[in-house]
Each structure stands twice: as C-alpha cells, then as structure tokens.
Image (tube, rainbow, N blue to C red):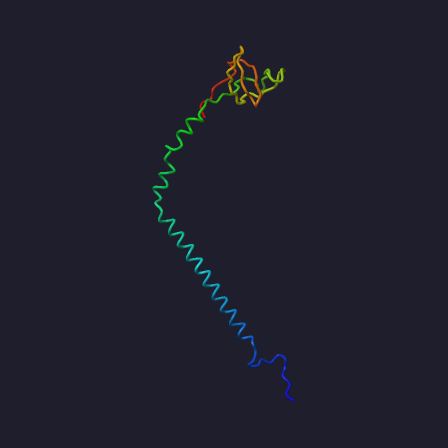
Length: 137
C-alpha cells in the first residue's frame, strides 16, 4: 500500500488556478489604479490650461462689488467718555445702567426732545458730546 502524505502535492491540486486568479485580479486592480491616475492627471492638465490672468483679473475687479459696498457704508460712533464706565439713562428700563466707555453707539432720530442712541440693543438718553464718530466702515 502506498500511502500519500497529506503534505504531498499532486498534479491535480487546484491551488495553482487560485494563485493565477489572484495574479489576474492584482493585474486588473493595477490597471484600474493606472486609469484613475491618468484621469486625475488629465484633470490637472485641464486646470492649468485655464487662463490664470483672467481669473486674477476677475478677482481684482471690484466693479461688481462697488454697489454693495456703497449701500453698506455708514459712520461708526462710540461712547467717548473719560471714565471706564458711564451711567446712562435707559429709556426702556427707566433707570440708569452702567455702560463701558468705547461701546458702539447708533444715533437714533426721534420726534422727542433730547439725544437718543442705541447701545447693546437698548435705547439710551445721553449728551451728544459723549458720542464721537470714529470713521466710516
């Protein structure tokens, strides 16, 4: 009796076809990777063909933004007092509230007598000389 060892490889072993399939699959995946890389390089070349001077000129051209800038331009005012905190009369609360010097102030036109401003979403009555225009935004 001839006993074959379980470690012996015979000619009928299907392991070689499995290995060949793995090699073919790897070759296909390499081809797919190459195609993806080629497509990416083509896209990069197309981006370089775009005229950079025209793009830069479009960015630098402010004609399309001028109307928006003109509409949004307005003067900026601040509370200009020597103290760190100034007690101002709040029209809404009907009491005095501490406001830090340098706070942004928005003057309000009213039919009432006096000078009124909005500070932190609240209307205050104050002296006009305490408000200083620091420029236009």
